[in-house]
Image (cartoon, rainbow, N blue to C red):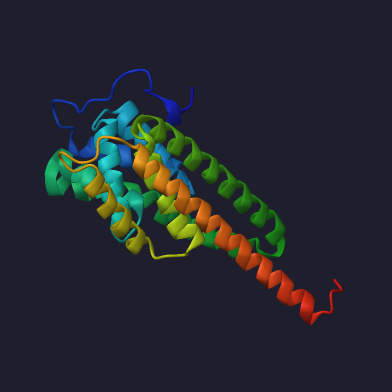
Length: 234
């Protein structure tokens, strides 16, 4: 079984005794040295939840949400939050240095190697494409793992859909989407709030259907306009 899925069978709970500064540094050093691209989230979860059990899944998701809402890299933000949670400022510093050090050294080495092998750029490009594809796979894997644990009703799926539509279809700022969907989620999950998902789910389906129809009509108009300009010839 790979490290990414390690520890799935047992519940992840925070340790009673906080780890040493050295242990925190070495753990994040290992993550920084073995993770690639967006796949770092999978490695973070594997190490922090599955292997060391410094946080549980619920806490990990909460910290990840904070990291994604702040400027900077998710990996470094997560290192600071977890390190501070475990050992205060010293733990945060150790975690940050640990996770950033391997990448910094590797980038210097990669820059030197890339300059030396510039004449064989096709080989280097192929390697980079392969790493990118692997990173996408790891992001998908951890998304499914966390999704099965946190998406428990129709309302959760609606919020996911609204976020994707806002960012990918309407090209809105991530901050705007997070603020809008977050406000809606606060209203929906407020104490004494709506007890049924049906109304929100049905309303969102109507919204999605209307959005798809508008996009279809827009594409049809663009195609008609192009045909008129070209006299109907391809």
